[in-house]
Length: 363
Image 1 (cartoon, helix red, strand yellow):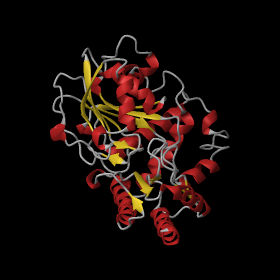
Image 2 (cartoon, rainbow, N blue to C red):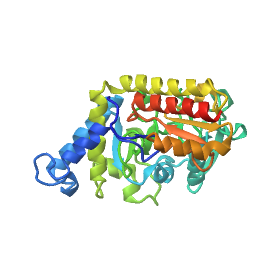
Image 3 (cartoon, rainbow, N blue to C red):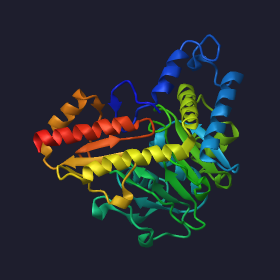
């Protein structure tokens, strides 16, 4: 996990990829696996690519310790697409689903699901400005709900679930677009996990779905075949052409994680990065982080300068120092440092050093 030789990219997604992965992909661009052509140029139904995809799925299963009674799907459409595809597949004759509103992405999931079912907001952090995760004691869960949906990490607001909700017999569904593979998880606690790949897995274009088998088979009649989990599972995610290059790159990332010590080692590094950055924020009145400490994201650290008039100068100086993409989301302003798996500790150290220097010069 050596430091990158390029600028440090704090982009929220599409996000930085591990440099060794990019270099390997570049070396294989014109000749993949001795085939004489790029992996982008081979048939997705050819034995070579099908073997590649099977191996990539096996690697993901090993990394996450996915139980045998779960299907792994490699799809398209991103998490936004899954906001509709999840209720299409998981209502299974029920009228409503419970959603926990923790920020911009959960709110968007709620709006999309409302096209397909009655959405009951079981809890919301809106009154507090989405700066904390509602405690489960405050949740109002319906035992007749088809599922309970959470966004495991809000990239815009910088809040993250560091615990697994107890939803009883009702399946728990989690959008893990931005924190999948950042630490070990107990997949068996979830009925379905989904997300876009462009944070910790690979480039934009690939969507992953991990779904318990007993939840399959109840898709709404209006569900297109390409969006039907049961049909996709029966066809190895290949009823249409999958995003082959994105799948290939995901496989390289899975191998990079495994060779770097797996998810336990990844979790240790991610916590060390976040601890370093939050400590710098907490030690200063020049910078402000409003997220409840117990709910702070380890992936997306959001903060504001006490004097917003300095935002432009901060970002300009950061770019000059090789610290890229620190501007906060337009909905919340300020700054955001996305420190996914591919960000080395050296990148966070460089950011902290720049923040201290900027404060000395402008504070």
